[in-house]
Length: 481
Image (cartoon, rainbow, N blue to C red):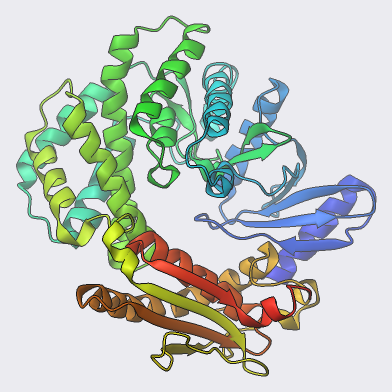
C-alpha cells in the first residue's frame, strides 16, 4: 500500500476515534520492522497510527494489547483498529526509548540507569507472569510456543547466515548434535509464561519516568529466562557485567514474590538462554551485516561476540557443547570481528566531519592537508520540498523517517562507509593524524546534516577515533530554520 493511501486511511480512523480531524500526521523513523508509524495530532488529542503489512502480526498485537491493558500492565492503550485495512491507533507514549535514555546519559551506566532497569525488570516480571493468564496464544505468530521448532529455526539461522557467510568451518554432524543437546536442556525449563521475544531497549518507552512496552507482536508462550537475557545482554546497552548479575538478582527477587523460584536452577538455564539469544542475533548480524553489508549490524557484531566471550570465560554451562563452543571461539578470535571502537591508541587520528550548503560556506581544512572527501547529497530525494519537513533538520524524526523510507540514503551511506573505512584503517596503520569528510546539499539543513551525523557516529563506534563534527550552515544560522 502506498504511503499516501496509508496516511489517508489512518487519518480517517483517527477522526472516527477522536471526533475531530487530524491537523498533522508525520511519519516516524522506521526501526528494524516493516511497520509504518505516524504521530497524529488534532485540536485536543494525539495518538500513534500504525500500518502493518502482516495481518497475523496485527491480530497478535491487537489481541495481546487488549489483554495486557485490561490487566493494568505497562502497554499503550489501543484506541481504534481496522484490521481489514491493517491499521490501528494507539496511545502516544512520546519519543524517549530506553536506548535513547542510555545514549543521552553522559556518565555511563549511572545510578539513574540502574534504577530505570529495575523498573523495567519489575514491569517485565508482571507482564510474563500476570500477562500469560487469559492470553489468547492461538493468535501468536509465527508459533504459539517457543518450542523445539522455534529454537531450531534460530540455530539454523546461525549456521547458514553466520558461520557459512563468515567462512568459519564446522563439523555439521557434531554441531547438530550440540544443537540437540542445547534444545533439550532449554526445553527442561518451565515454559508456561509470556515470552516477549524481542525485549530490548528500543522497544521500551519512557513516559513520565515510567517504562512502557511496545512491539510484542512476536510474543509467545515460553520460559521466563529469555527476555531478561535479551535485555541485559543487549550489546549496545553496554551494561557492566557485574551490574548485569546484580540486576538478575533483583529480577529473581521480583519473580520470587509471584511464583516459587529455585534460583540456582534458574541461573543454570539462564546462561543457556543467553547463548541461544545471542546465537539467534548472530544469524541476523550475518544476514544483515555480512550478506547485505549494513554497517549498523557489522558494528554491533564485535560487541555481541564479547558478550559471549564473557559467558564462556566466566560461567560453567550445565551441558557439554564442544563443537558449538569451538566455532564460537573461532568467531570471537577472528580479526574481522575484533572490537575497535574502544582502542585508545586510535585517538591520535582526528576525523573532521562536516555538513554544508553548496549555496553558502564550503568547508575549510584547518589541518593544512587541503581538504578530503566531499560527498554530494543533492541527488537524494529532498525532504525540504515537503511542508512538514521544511523547517526541520536532518536531526528531526520526520526528516530521518523520510530519508530512510523515501530515498536511497541508506545505500548511499553504506557505500560511503566502505570508502571512508578503508581510508581510516589506512591512516591508523600509517599513524596519520588528520582526515576530513564533508557532505553537501542544497541548503545544508536536511540531507547533509543527517549524513554527517551518521558517519560521525559510525566512525566513533567502530574505530574510537577522535571525531570533530561541524554543521557549517546550521551553526551559522544558530540552528534556526
